[in-house]
Image (cartoon, rainbow, N blue to C red; front, side, top):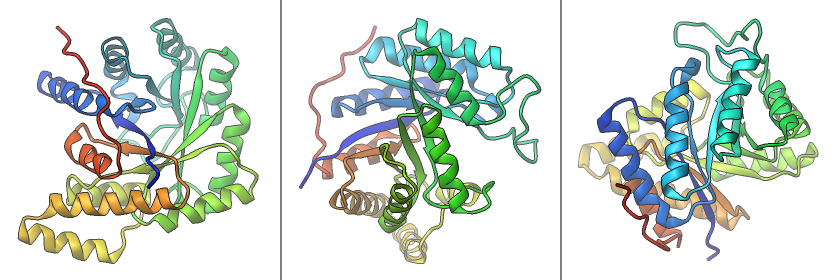
Amino acid sequence: MITPRVSFEFFPPKSIEASFRLWNCVNTLAPLEPEFVSVTYGAGGTTRTLTHDAVTTIHKTSGLRVAAHLTCVDATRAETLQIAENYAAAGVTDIVALRGDAPKSASGFVAHTDGFASSIELIEALTDTGNFRVRVGAYPEKHPDAADQDADIAFLKRKFEAGATEAITQFFFDAETFFRFRDKCRKAGIDAPIVPGILPVESWSGVQRFAASCGASIPQVLHDAFTHAEATGTTDLLATAVATELCDDLVQGGVEHLHFYTLNRPELTRDVCHALGVTPKARLQNVA
């Protein structure tokens, strides 16, 4: 079996307790030698400062390559590029450039009067600086704001033309969903790497909410299986098996890199990686 490369997504902590949880997550997964780790940006830019602090701290203390999420929401072009410049000054040269979700109080994305109108404009500006490797989001199933999947793929192609080097997909639960998407992208002339995003099921109710908000479909067989597992107290076993099988199917289909959405809870992601043959190489040293 081919051992895939892996990367992990974290989110910035909002409390002291959450900070310890994040560091535990980093400490647990760093020995798997990920290609990189990324840190998210809250809806409406609500965690802008927290994201910066988490990114720079992980970069300084862990030795990991860190990619900072950066969005177009609720900021001028100058403010957004200043954030990017601060990252570059701190030695962080990887950015995940996204349009971003609107604040919860808004009905949809509205660009700031002096801000970037789309992720494409943000990608172009970051690329023009010459300081960053830019990754972007991709959607194996239609983005809620897109007219159809063809429009999604056409927009993804424009992201690469603007300077992006790699895409990370939204999560999905059927390997064929990714393969169909990958094939359509290749047919559209996209030859850049597209990394599948994997969401191990830490909370079945939470996953259903996430899926509803982003347009990810959940096979009925998973509904039935997790309903039964919740009744029998076997959700962790099922979640590990489901994520491992999905990842194995992807690897068998030629995928070389998997990106895990950890939700700052490392154990399930770690167990899935171990099952795939991704095992610890070294221990991350304690930081005083």
